[in-house]
Length: 70
Length: 265
Image (cartoon, rainbow over all chains, first blue to last red; front, side, top):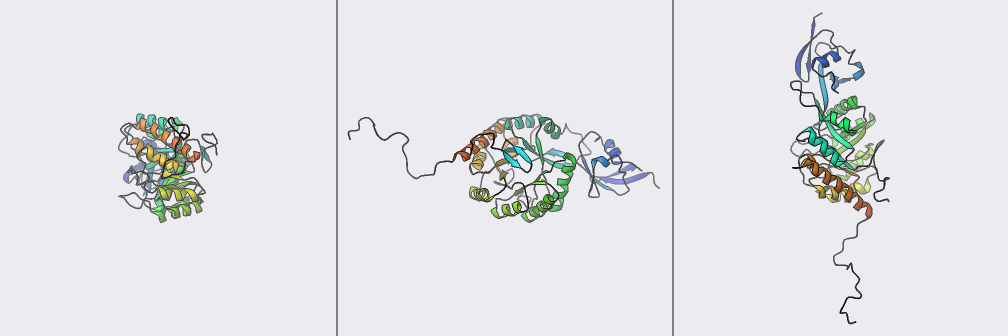
């Protein structure tokens, strides 16, 4: 059991402490108070599960938000 | 039909709106201008895009916060998607954030024109309708595609007037009119409007609404243009409901022909 997990967030490699949750990742990214949606390996992780879902080695995450657009 | 009556509303799925002007929120010089322009437009529906969070920069508060505070109905788009799969993913991400069934479906087929990929749009529309979305698809001003989209269960059809951001206006009013005549769902002209007369013309053709972004956000004075667009959409709607006079080749006097001074007969 390693002490870190390697994931990609929006295409960027990141290392997180093993057992980190989605919520912990978002807080680490300064997105604790931002409305975002998170996809892991192309599956949405519902907001209600952010506190419980732990990240696994090799997870590819997409973190998106709303921006101005037409 | 009533003229400006309160019964004249735009229905999109389960939603009802008084304003027939829908606006985008992109390309504004800053949030303050966007806020003022949206207020001047008196729109109720605003579009937003879904994008990756930029992890390297923390910009000013997102335009989204301002929209929530303004009480707008938010219409997420799938702009920038080139496949049905990406459009569906994007729509689901938006719904995850907002719990809204609304989606402005865009599946682009060509970078230069930003014209839609119609087969992919149909494919995505079918998937999204099945998944419970209120689908408002952007597509060419093609009456056959309009019918297909409606048959799939889209809540409206949104033909372009001209390429996105081009400001060329209503390039094929006849196709728009054919779409309007046969549509059983609202028709919203989406994209291509350049100035107020374009919006008025669209409404005079009988469309149910106009969606625009660049025409307002890219104007020298976006706030004033937003106000102009509001008036144009309202004027065009009223003109349409009023039933315009037929076009005639020769004059018909407006003043009585009898009793003109110096008449000896």
